[in-house]
Picture 1 (spheres, rainbow, N blue to C red):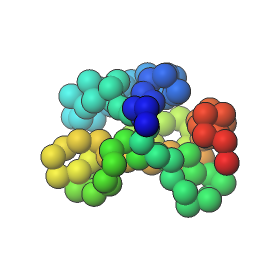
Picture 2: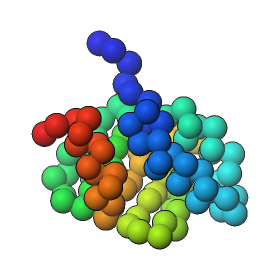
Picture 3: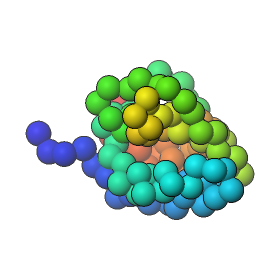
Picture 4: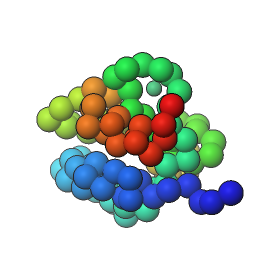
Length: 105
Ligand SMILES: [Zn+2]
């Protein structure tokens, strides 16, 4: 099995958007994590608006960081070790398109 792909390879613009949106939230130190995230699986909820994905094997959410994008919803879910374990992406057809290019259904 090959390693899960880097988010920065599949969704480079989303990485930059999240880094930008982290400014002023108090969660700026997450930038380094965001740049190194790997997409381990994509959400299978089948919601047409959903382009969320997991970034670790086991998702256990302890807290969330809600960002304020111009379009849609972006929420970082962190586990008890303060690692980003899931990225909630809603209402973002641009992201969904890129994910589906990489992970055809
Ligand atoms: Zn979903």
